[in-house]
Image 1 (tube, helix red, strand yellow):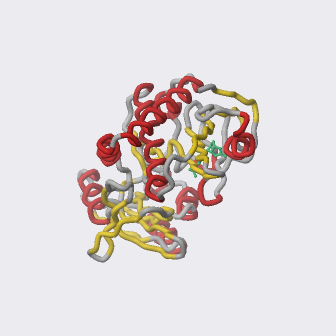
Image 2: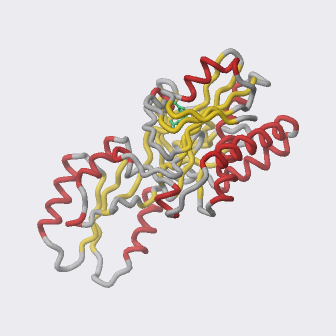
Image 3: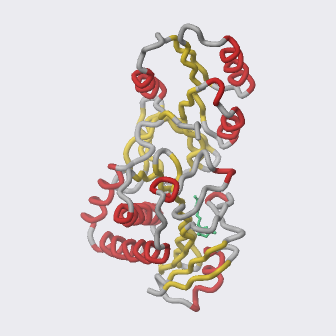
Length: 321
Ligand code: BTN
């Protein structure tokens, strides 16, 4: 396993797909700058210097759809295990391909197949500031710990960890089941109200566990369905309107990103009518679900937030910074 570090490559996935025959399995292509970073479902991965941006490939062992589903999960869990060694934080895995931290995206995984080879591309926000466009929904390790990390070492350790985990699960079903357990311990979507696109179908429901095939369980109209692939389109979040400091643009931006927003205003005596009018206007214009909650001045908002999170199957989302 060698790492080949480039100054700039349009996309490490595209480069390796074109040039893999010059490299060995599990060799790593990494780049500092990546002007045409690719995300999943044709999206753009806005790449910033300081991110870990890398791709490796390996030959497909089996060809079943279910094994294909396991790959991003094993990659994600391997990355989390390594990141925990560098910074002990509460990482989550968002089925199937994302790593989250504090309700924001820390990294994404793009798995592509070409000529019986699997190309695994990973983008992780490590030493970078977040690009302005995604500041509300992304986070970097640097933002969280104010430390800088050795990117090359992190990348090499993640690929080594993946190789070890993947070989173990191919040999031994028990290892895969252990991994599924670990995945469910940090299952970001669990108990959240989500909307998924599966081909041309759209389904909504409450996410459950990842099962022994790597499928996501989702409870919809009282029935538990198992989903083997799909794009999580919408996720419900709770935003609390804080009057003067709120950056209305951010709410609109999050709405555009596809979040299903529950917009909340806490009203205690003496609250300014202008704030209430403003709240009503933003809710109407953006067609947000909204709720006004009347509280006493000294009431603990946290209790209400817990209650709201339960009521709406959603988490509070902070947009203050
Ligand atoms: C996603 O979240 O949609 C997946 C993002 C994957 C980004 C990485 S960065 C390195 C590799 N090269 C690419 O062009 N994409 C992946």
